[in-house]
Every structure is written in structure tokens, then in C-alpha cells.
Image (tube, rainbow, N blue to C red; front, side, top):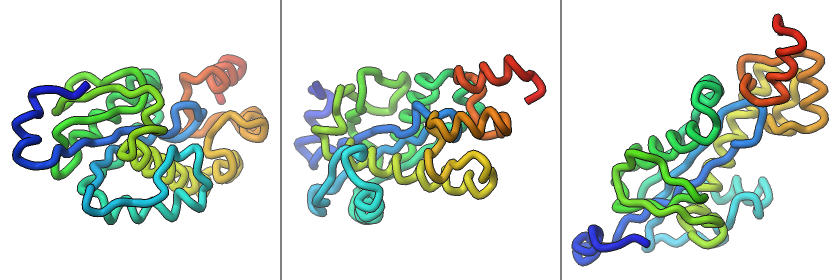
Length: 206
């Protein structure tokens, strides 16, 4: 639990608590997206929820409200070359740290969805398993991360339409795996992920 180092700040003003979440750990292509959000208690946002429980249209409707009403927000992308170099867990944790560091005004503390905390954070933090279902700031972060990543995948689809990134957003769907087998990986694929790695093992020139 968040404790005493924050007590003096809390006496002077409400604590600025950042919620942090990610989108895109499982896909074979594209970046992992991480968002941090400090909500403004004076400007509530109705309808926040875990982004996975919201329709795409609802996420798109909430995105500008969060951006407009939050005290601070930040989205960070960790690209596939860094994912391949570090592994997806470490890349995600680094993205979380960067997102928190990029907040202005800064956070007094952070609540991070999951069971791991990044090292080197600029503020106290706690990990919340299932936090995107219980902490509104994490819900807001999950929405920003998901919408931002989906938009990035649409941009990548325009560059590499043969893979169908507009439909599956890089996840290992049957259609994506078939396109990968036909065309080989593009620069946006995560070469360390098993299906892509297996394809390269069969055809090292791919």
C-alpha cells in the first residue's frame, strides 16, 4: 500500500496518483503501447472500464475525454527492435517507467496493472493484479494504450497491407499466420516471437 512518504504531500493537496497499463504484449508485430494517466477528481469521466470490456467505438469516444480532462497523460511506444533485444516483459516495464517519467505535472505515486514494478521509478508505486478492473486511473490508461496502439497498427497496415494489420492488429490470428507464411516477416514483426522465429529458421533469407 502507498504509505507515509506521501503523507506530507497529501496534507497540502490531493495526491496525484498515476494509473499505468499497457496494450499489445501478445501480438507478433508492432509496438507495445504503455500509457500513464493522472485523473482530475474535479473533472470526472463517466463510463471508464477495462479497455478489453469496451467496444472499439466506446474506447474511441472515451479517448478524447481522457486526454481533455486528465491532469496529465502520457503514451509511450516500445518498438519491436527493443522488444526483441530486451524481451517483452522488460520492454513493457521500461515503457511503464518512461510513461510515468513523462507525466507533467508529475505523479506522487503510481498504481500499475499487473504483478511487477519497473525499476528506477521517479515515485512510489504499487502493482495491482486486475487493476484495470478496480482503479479508474488504470482504466483510463488502458483505454489510451489500446486506442493509441490500434491507431498505430492502422498506420502500419497502410505500409504493409498484405498482412491485414487493420483487422487483427498484429495478433497471431489464422489470417495473420497465413500472411506471414506467404510473405515472410516485415520490419514491424517481432523476430524473437516463436511463430516468426520458426519461420526464419525454415527460411533464413526471409
